[in-house]
Image 1 (cartoon, rainbow, N blue to C red):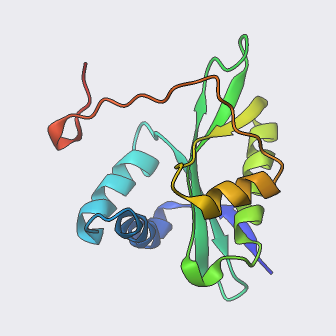
Image 2: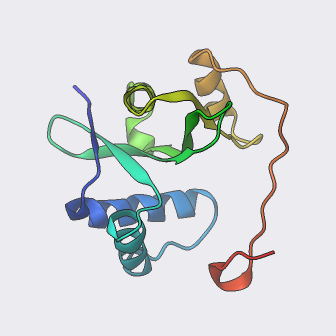
Length: 157
């Protein structure tokens, strides 16, 4: 049985661990010590920038996470839920964890009146692309993704 719930401040250590695993997956060098302060400030500070859902096994072990925020406007004056990161630990893959997280995201979108759920996926991640296709999601080719990144993490144009 998989349960999905919103992360709370007490989950910061496991969130730091998961972010480290994601960083390692993309070839970076994880730093749990650095992440705990950032996670606390960004998710549980005065102005939270995102929300996180955690998928847990019956024994409460964390199997995966989904981080998301809300975008406005989406269509007209409607809002959308934007999935930033879906991550399932390697030993928990192919067990319904990703599907449980996506279902919970859909429920969060419905509860907040969002007209849609949106996300991006890397072209070179065939497992993710196959997973999203199995959900019935279709690629949307109407947008081009841009990024501005400054040294030290402070984005400016």
